[in-house]
Image: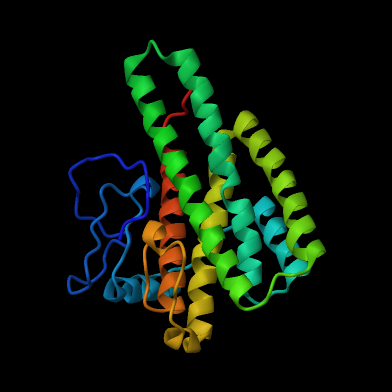
Length: 255
């Protein structure tokens, strides 16, 4: 079942996000390779993409991203936990919100340039879909944490995430105004870190394969047979967001 998105309807090229993969690997059809069309994968494809993530080196993170990750480790521990992932998802949608608002302002200034206005409109749709996707991650992880009786500390799971989100909002806004490419690079680092962290967590917890996943949000985000497959799907979503930010780095700015 597909997640709700504002997907553009183009012919679907057959693309694999890891060029050079063997021909026998299960093919994932992306239409196009954009977070606005984040695909829901079946179990076989999820297992393949999980292995691909584990086999792929992480991006060389910049100093701001490294500082963010160190701060999270100090506050919530170095080990991955569902509670820590929930906090990260509070922050994850913020850049897309800022980019969407900036795109709307650009559209108001440049609406007479039909070509540029079309690109801006596509960017608005992409950023809205990215926000929605990250929001589903937050809701689903909050549901998992609540079911386990975790995340009850008001300070660690209410106040601190709010402070982090407010700080990250201002940082992301400033970077996007002053140096948009740095904002996109930071977000690519953030999403790459999330992709690998989720994948490593699943690899370190094989018992999650036997934990069934039942969610009130399954009809909107998609259903999965196990918590392991759910987290594999979220990891793959984060890869799509990373690729989107990397694409923005190569495109002309929307000015």
